Length: 415
Ligand SMILES: [Fe+2]
Ligand SMILES: [Fe+2]
Image (cartoon, rainbow, N blue to C red):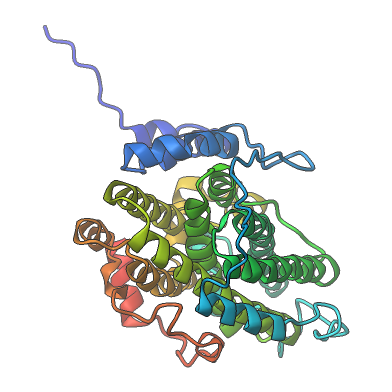
């Protein structure tokens, strides 16, 4: 007689558990998955301490601050020579384009969730279809509140990113070898301080709501704060996070009808365009002239893995916890949210900015292109890089209609 053990699938086992337990298991596996999804062992090893602090120990939650131990040398110049004309021109432009976060924005504007003429985000941007699939029909007031919360979540993540950008800009200003880069860097420190000021003021006084820093954003910020190599900080902050930020800012700028946040985002985008421009100038010079082939490959791998982390890891989890954790399994939410049209549109804008910049700075060899191709991202090759885009290009109004463009449908099928 042969005894056979009944085969029980993992999903059916999970199904028998209460929602809270299912979600805890999914979250734990998903955190492990973050690290396992990093294919390159060197990159995974380098990011492991940050991932442990962010995903396992949750150092980004529950306390009033966290210490990130920086480890880099300041490059103290002794010759004071002007050494990079294009950087010096960016510095002059930054000095003449400074704005005042208090005086130049219409802070007297009334911002409310229920004014139909000035929605902070349009209805199409909010993934209402996800709860609807699970029988949750939100009434008008709830829809307005969810829209408000998603906007507050986005703006909170912008603010947390700006705090990281402030410290990264300060660190990079110390580290770079170009005198003109140090001058330029000082203006960026001021810019990032002002961005932190205006996002905080908007969240605090207009939205009256601030969400904690997203775990995955924290892991990336922690990783580049604590890495001693200035060009990794540069690559992480000026190209990857600023690229992400530019994509996100542009998406929200085009979608919002709330005049105060629109003006605020326009000013911030104009500053960020200079930051990414500076980043690509510095890194192209460094990567094409100063690093060995092995070091270049390492940076190329790092950028690819971080790009995928950024693509796959922003899932409005804090919104889920607040609104849907009792009704929709977390695993289902994660899968659905990545396919939501607004998230696809946001990621498309982000990679449209990022991929041409990586190409321009020398981190897109044929070897790595194969990986980008498998990830469905080579469609963005040959696009305009940061040195070719003007501030006006970046703040152009959205002309797209309400339908999901074919390009996004295609991306959705590939992801
Ligand atoms: Fe910024
Ligand atoms: Fe910036």
